[in-house]
Length: 221
Image 1 (tube, rainbow, N blue to C red):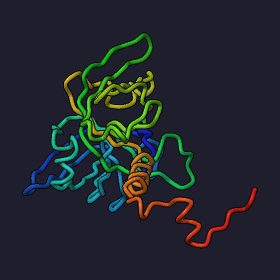
Image 2: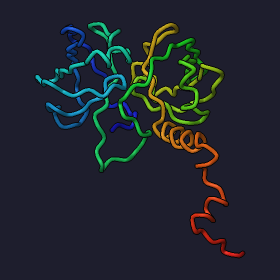
Image 3: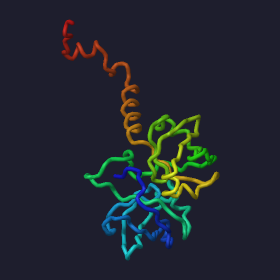
Image 4: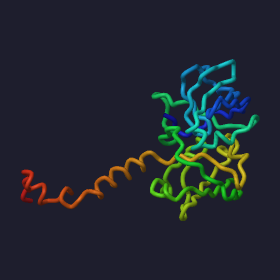
């Protein structure tokens, strides 16, 4: 599990196609951290990948067809910078929000507007995910935990502070480019639970009559 707080920026060293999969090698310099190890989970632009090889500061991952189809990893080029986050430790502060590293869809940047000392990104997404996003709620963009500033139809906006802009790959992003989106897992669970409840037939729905028939007794006050 991750929190959406980027720890470093890596640079793509090589991309090797293997059938419908891809081997991705990234040069990463960890910040005051223990060395990378094989089998650990690392989020690359918000995509949880497993380390398959480590050579000094070069870390290698395998991205399967499903990952390449549902994320922007298939758009990577050698030399591209990527956001890096290692899996969180149980002893750390939870500074962002719950991020699984399971990208839901790809969003498209519609505009990037500089507003004094911040930047406002407007991003479009598939309308079928509209129930998973709320104003002032959390969303993960390319692995970055951000707060939704506003929503309209199938677009939303986020405000980027100078620190986030300078220390992530957002500083390279322009209108027309694509980003990975992971919606808040809490919203997904709520939708599933409520959908199950409201889809019940009247005969199986929980009512006062059905509770009484099951032996429930009112308290009397």
